[in-house]
View 1 (spheres, rainbow, N blue to C red):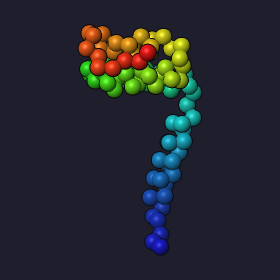
View 2: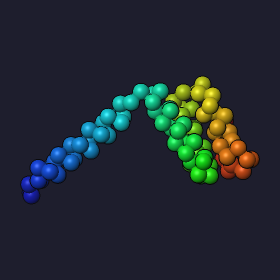
View 3: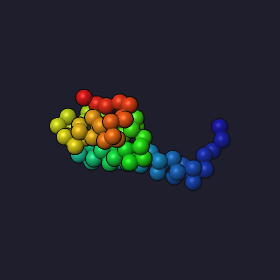
Length: 85
C-alpha cells in the first residue's frame, strides 16, 4: 500500500469538514439557500431547475409562501414546463 502524502490527507480532511459543515446548517438557512438558487435559475430562464429548488424549499418549510408562489410560476410568463402544488 502506498503512503498517502500529508497534503493529500489535509485536502481530504478539509473536504470532509466542508461537507460536514454544510450538512449542519439550520432549516431556515437551507430553505433560503434553495429559494435563492430558484430565483437565480428563474432569472436565467431555467425554469425546470427553479421549480426543483422551490420544491426543495417548500419541502423544508411547507408554509414558505414565497417559494410556493414562485414554484407555481417561476417564469411569471405562463411558459413554465412544471410547477409545484
